[in-house]
Length: 176
Image 1: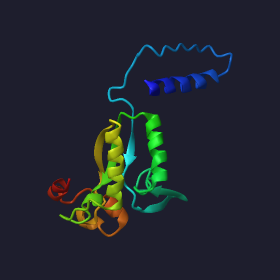
Image 2: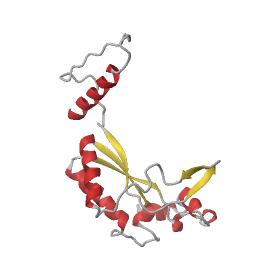
Image 3: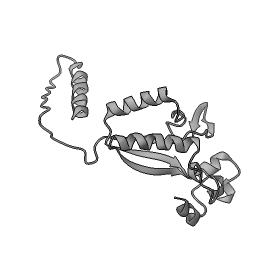
Image 4: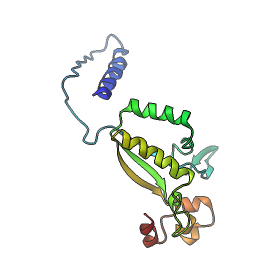
């Protein structure tokens, strides 16, 4: 309910800043729920940290193949940075999140698993926070980004590996 009240207050401030001559009327009743999102409020989070290719593809503009939040996640042991992130997530009052990883994070080589690397520690940091706060997590593999899983013709460069779907579906599904 706190989040709903914050949204209503921000909306009220926005609409009240409109021209006085506007014919807009707003009625606020915080005791009455008119609509409710089925899953609640949520956001995307990323437990992906390693660098990814960035290309100059757009006449001087850059394109990162890692997504909009690539590289924004601090190391798991950076308490100061994580306290800010957790404070922000507390303020958001999330009900769910889609938490993205890459296959290479937990299975960098076929049949060789890694559960104690820096990105897995970030994943655990997020999961601990979400569990403590009752946030529903949809764990999602954003893409494999593992050379051993990429199609042979795409293994020659980092961008090909990122763009490739799994060449061996059985090995990929066994890993997941």
